[in-house]
Length: 317
Figure 1 (cartoon, helix red, strand yellow):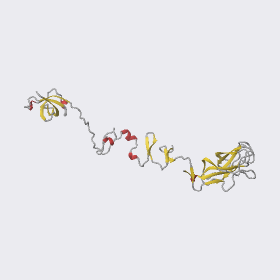
Figure 2 (tube, one colour):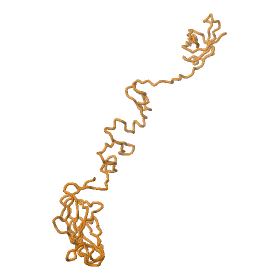
Figure 3 (cartoon, helix red, strand yellow):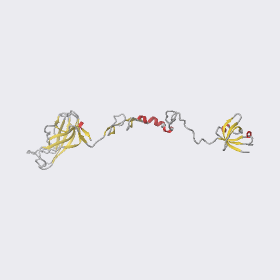
Figure 4 (tube, one colour):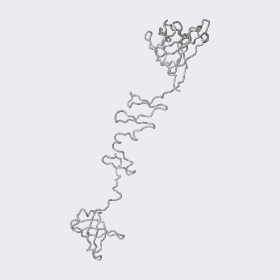
């Protein structure tokens, strides 16, 4: 007898016959081929492999299926139908792609779809994500040019865009001013005790606008002695009797006469401005005063004036 390998095309359980396609260069399909009774119907599934005993080649009616088994899996696998118009998250029902792109390009993981911001959330170049709470992301719109991201707990998402810190300012508009203006400087009273604050002396009854005090000018009430004197000038704001100190400025008189230019009474006349490393901010309508304490009970700075700029005109470079 001669046997051939083939593949099950169909199977009929009533007559227990099958249609078989024989392997080979001249593959052909043979109809109504009997199947031996010991072969189970499940082994005759379409696509299963089989062996056919041909008996007498001249009589196809003698053909019989003597063995059958499942064939190998399709090497191309099962294809995903691209039928939907809207992609769904992987892991959810109906997770299919679109007909114009590979399905994997149209999917996001189900967890990401729920918790992350995607392209449609962004409205402008530079937008960033910031958390407004636990497991909650929001969009923070891009700030103005040259602003920096700054923590601010008062904001809904805890941050904001703000002007960056700068190490240098410039004055615009009316420029520098002095207080008191067009008047002699202030000569606070010595307390009469070493390193003890004297009384406050008013410099300005009320600021006309918000000001930034950026420097001071002062002299000494005498230079014609050999005493070395140190002092501190204190700047305060607030009503008379309720002043609040906002800054101390050290002052120093060298030992020996002739330490600087003086008038006939020995008073200092070479008063040079001293600029502060950072401005002292004073709101509009605020009284400004000064007082001092000195290492001497009789000698102290005099003719004190404060250098300022309008806060609105002191800007970052």
